[in-house]
Length: 210
Image (cartoon, rainbow, N blue to C red):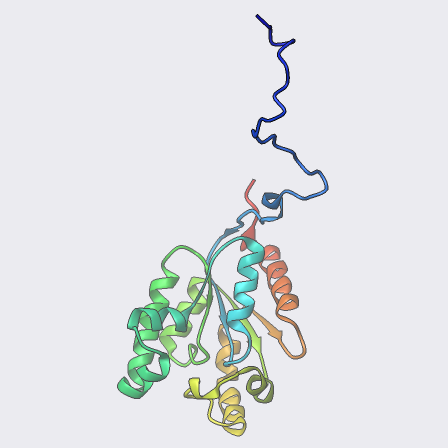
């Protein structure tokens, strides 16, 4: 009887032998550890400012989730925002917007990108100012128009001249609720997201748990 040392090697064996390639990085090492968010972070600004894109990028960098308020409302209502406006009017939409904002503000802290008109209602401004940290992304009407692929999906954009008036009217409201203002002109989503991430860390709102 052969012992283990003398047993011949079976060259026909198909059993796989694991081999680690040290030239390749472990994918798990590239995945960011989830960071802790002390309170909700709201992104506000006129449509086309990049609120959703920037908040999603920040979420990826921090290993957490983000919520687009308008998309959240659309999923719960089972209809696009423009249809809610057409069927129920702006007043009805604004009431739904306030109720949804309050619900999210009271939930688990997360990154929330808000619709352009979120600051119109005093109740919304109170929620934003008292419930979290507000990032105001500034954009001009012309730049916003160049970023929006289908303006027909934005019922309140109108034309560039109307958009300029709307931005001017809302400017003091955006500034009222803002904890920080960032000009998005000629800046990439990644650049803005990294700056937001740094600001949140400096303010003690976002940190890496031990």
